[in-house]
Image (cartoon, rainbow, N blue to C red; front, side, top):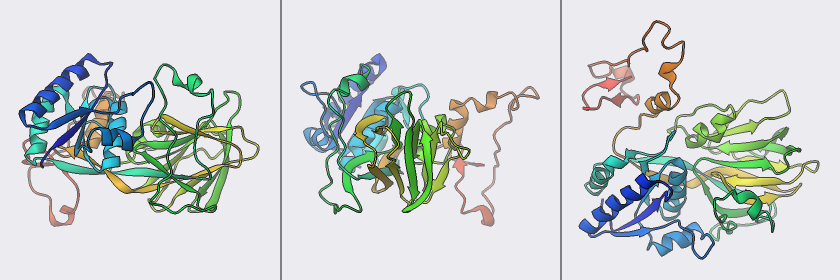
Length: 357
C-alpha cells in the first residue's frame, strides 16, 4: 500500500520504545513519508481522537511502540480515521501487538510492499441517557500520576438522538466498556438488559461488556471466557457479584447490552478501554453495542492467537501438561486437508509448507 502519512504513538517511559521511534522516523525520511507524533498531551490537557488525527494530517498508517496499553491508544486514533494500525511489541503480557522492536523496519517495508494481511477487529460503540462527564474535583483523585483525563465524549452528529434511544456518544472501545463502583464500601447496583429485555439485577464491583479482543483483558481477570478474536460476539462479565449467578454471558453482535444504574445504587463510573470517561447517577443508563466500523490492524502472517495464549499463560508449564516429563508437541501434518476439512482455518508452518492443526 502507499504510505504517505504515518502517525507515531510512543510509550515515552520505555527507552526501547524511544529507540524504536528513531528507526521509524529514519524509515519515513528515507521513503519521503510524513511522520508525526500523536496522542500526546498539549498545554496540560488532552485532545479528542479527531483533534489528534487532524493535527497529524489524517495519517493512513498508525504505528504504536509499547505494550497493549499503547496499542489501545493507537486503536482509538486509527479507528477515528479508518487508518491501518501496526503494533510494535515492547510489553510483557501483550496479546495485541504484532512485531518486535527489532523487526519494525522490515515490518514497515512489508506494509509498503503490500506483503500484509488486514485483521478486522470488532469495536464497541456507546449510547447513554445523558452526556458523560467527570464531576469537578474527581480528576485529581483518579489520575494516580497518569496525566490528564481524556475530554468528555462528544455527541456523534451522524446519529439520531431522542429520549428513548439516548444520546450517541463519540466513543470507540477495542477491549471493553465498564460500569464500576466509585465508593470502596458500596457496590454498584445495575439492571442488565439484553436486546431490550431485562436479564437480571446485579450488585457487583463492576459490570463490563467486552469484545472478543478484550476477552483476554479485564474480563479474563474477572473469570470470563477466552474468546477467539475472529469471533463475532459481545461478552458480558460481572465482577465480584453478590448473587449465585456469576457467569459471563456471550451475546450475538446484534444483541446490544444495556446497563441501568438502579435507584438503590451509588454513583457508577464509566470506563472505556481503561480510561475514565464519565460518572452516572442512579436512574442513568448506557447501551453498549457493536460499532458499525472496524479496526484494521496490520498482520504480517497468520494470527497464532492460541500459540500466543499458550505462551503468555505458560500453559505448557502447567503440572498436568508436564506430568510425564515433557509437554505435548504441536499436532502437525504434512499433507493438504481433506475435502471435509478444507473450509477450516488452519495455521501454516513458518515456511508456509504444511498446515498445523
